[in-house]
Length: 95
Length: 485
Image (tube, rainbow over all chains, first blue to last red; front, side, top):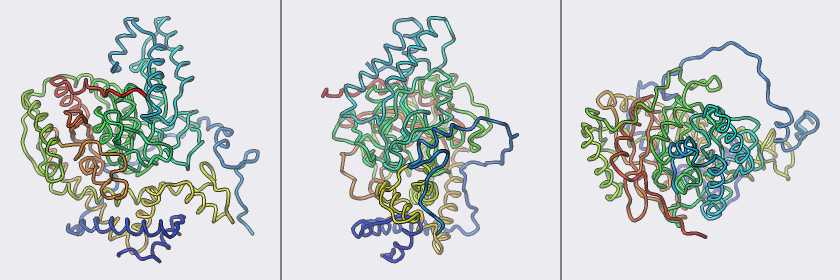
């Protein structure tokens, strides 16, 4: 197994996800299978090859700032799990 | 019953039917069949009828008719339509209402199209069978025990079963072309940068593209014409004039150079599908195309590259779903940190979590170079190889899917076997080139499709070849007989 249990727990912390024992086992198995498949890429020598991020040549685009109406605050707040007046309510952060 | 947008348009022009009658007939189809087909997660009944009545008034007053006048269009439930849900088929976004329109929706409405509802899909567009929808299954109209493909499964079902005339989906790794193929409709992924993605929920930003489905090429070209072009809200759209695609709708493809990349026809492709595609190629030859075999050896690495890049981008894009500003928030959390963990873990499905884990793992310290950077480099090599081949050919022909629609539940246990059903569609996302799936046959009562890929921004060539094929055959006229419930 390439993916160790402690590693899986650490990555889950980073991703802010929780898994029960059974799910953990399943994820490790799937990740192992995927990593094994991805090792195919090592057949290729990529020394000195540039990376491609966007598939097509992209240039910076600039535009003038223009004044536009923003979205309706009420519609935005209606989508929040909990709100009060113009604010989204969150649990206490500062002790 | 199966009607195309251009047929409806001439019926409306000749006053044979009203927009309201059109919309009602599609709503009736949905009422009658969608409980079993599961194409829709939301149907905009009242709104669509209201809009239909307004359009009828426009006809009465002799006003100009937009290019999509009165056409019922379904929209995948990850593209924002103001006032409608945008659930991405996830519990995470259940109850969320889009406060704005995606750019493509504004353009459809400016052309008088009617949004009839939001289509079912795999959760956050991750899947190839629509089985990963958190809400309901979608079934293939040609055989209800089979999947429609995915992730834009609902879109494909709606067009195939005449529950909409056209549909928008998203294609990050074949998610428009594969379900279009399995349901026997046309599905186009335009070039990366051709169509604005503003308002589509991001999955993998360097691969995502809004795509479209229709019953025939004329409709596909018309809808592409309406939604393509630069958009100030999506800086990845390219400032390039959109050609008049109606000019591409001719049977003449004399002298067109078509390549058959042999890597797409190796082991794993169903022989009967191979035969259908060979027959399609013969039609193109008869119509004047010059066909030659070619080779893109690196294409076999597309899937590994795709899963590294897509998972990495997913882990970053889906970090926004944190239970704070919108979307699901857990009811039982200890403190604000726990809120993130509980909200995400309770609301996201296993497939989504798996990909977030894969992506986070590969982007974490010590693995970044080994996987992510490696994949970006191989992506460059694949892209170069495609560009080289495209210097010699106007287009490439390949299968869309290695098999016809598979049984519901058949590939549920093994994620990798599910991923393999996308093996032929992924390369166009990796390279960013446009590709279409066109129906070209039937095997055991199930539709078969083939792909046409061209160089960047040559959707016009795609339409030309696809139209030439379509007008020489009858596959686009077939429609499923759905047993009434």
